[in-house]
Image (cartoon, rainbow, N blue to C red):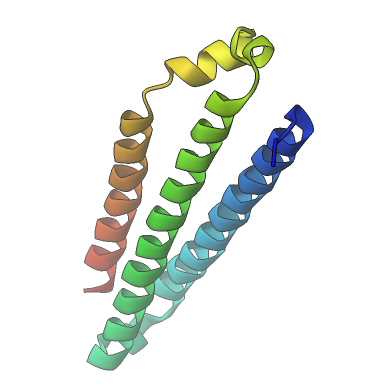
Length: 123
């Protein structure tokens, strides 16, 4: 099957939507955690509660890192598969110039720092 430009654009749009949905999921979960940390008071002294919050923090963050990494790899791979006229455009040149490994490391580092801060607040 030969894919045309519209197929690639549809794939880009779908994966970008996936990334936005995952970012929203991450933001809602971690905002909820911050609300719990802010208002839980003595309830956070229970080790079971602490473990549950820590597990949610770590597991949702790992899921987000892996999912976002997959989305980023797909977006950059799709952009490289687009026709020459796209690759020679300003947006296409920008896609090919982006150091994907740097994006992957920064994504992991930012989420890792958020997790460390939340775990410190929990314990």
